Length: 153
Image (cartoon, rainbow, N blue to C red; front, side, top):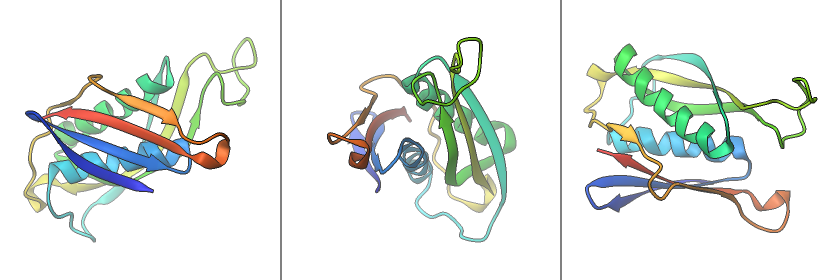
């Protein structure tokens, strides 16, 4: 499970796999970090938490990556070493809300923030919906997930 950077016209794309939805989200985020710099210092930066909500699973992936770019810009830190602790949504079986299901998709995650002056960072401007793909692979839960995301550089 992991990610692969792919050239994409004037942009960069990340193709990722994971055994779970949480794992594939974290792998795409790690791909975003890899697209932003060649080497990530191992011992620099503190972990921080974040949460994101969205109206669909695909929108949750988009909004999560968009939040990481926003946090990079406002904190002057490159988010790396991503962990997605939980994802819940209307189809996940988690119970809350008026009809016993969450009205939105929800993500809890953390990352380590590496100061931008500690890396030779390239600017990834934005995540795009262009060609975005998030799908389950295989016939059952054991199959895992695949994602493909294009970033504007």
